[in-house]
Length: 434
Image 1: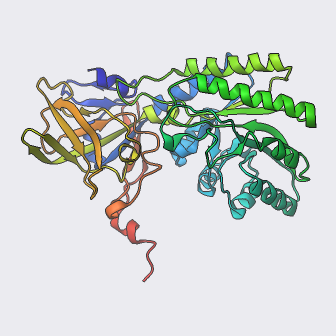
Image 2 (image 1 turned 90 degrees about the horizontal axis):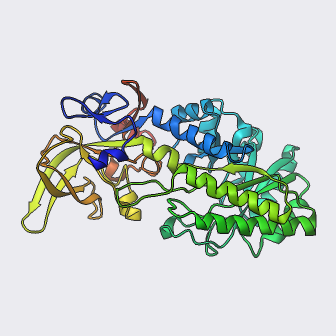
């Protein structure tokens, strides 16, 4: 029963030996909405938001928590984050448009990205985005030009690359020297000079983001010390005042029993204590702290449900259990080697276990969701539930093999609300022109 601890806190097993999520029978959810189905526990989402506000707020009151939309965003989730008092970290015109569509307070929206287009920057200014996090010299010049044309000054932060290894997967490391993101610390002084001399840009802060799915806290401490030390140097040379400081996000989550990660409380303590200590040491005024969690809010709240189809046993080698989803809705095992755990949702507490490999239905040998997992004897028609699927699964989903992206439901107090319908075949062809 250890695996159930990876599911949202509301998860339990009913008298029929079925997995309940948010008070809803997962088997009935699968019957009503079909599979693959992604289930978000609303209470779990809100609880993570509250934990971030509390853990940072009690240690460093001048903190704004902004949700990193790249983990996953849609209208329903954006409304939850409005109600929870969070801001948004967006990285595209599309994410910006979702925020605007629900009336998200634009002053709490921070626009990131390493290659923002002119049209995206024009939209950001037109819609009154709060901050633009400038990533490179090209953007610095382009944004000043766009702001001049709009006749309005834009507040910005500069994204720096502190050269710190967060010890995570190479594809999710973003703070090392060799990165497509941000101004290397060796070029950052020139960026400060240019930003402060730009007529229509108001430089108010510095940002860094060292990576994602991070399980160690020392890299954050190291990067904070580097960037705040740099800020102190820029104050002395240029009179730069650090009003806002963002150490990004990237806190990892526990996908399996053998991959523990720090708690939100530990993360908050490491960040705030280092900022307070370094500001005191360097004689800096304490800036507003901007923290950008994504995965650690959405990830644990999401559960993927699949239906078992074909089963193939190769004697002495492996037993494959194929499900009706896979790399089109969750590419992370194939892309990053992410290890998940699972339950058979219609017989959670089965006594006899067998070792199986859960395979996706798509035409790639690498379409394996979970390799070598012990489950109660699995049969066609069983429902497989995979926890910790709320982040980066849906946002990276594709229509590979002309598959339909899955439906999503939000559950709370025994009620399920559809927040994205399943794509239809007509949807797949709706953009085609013949």
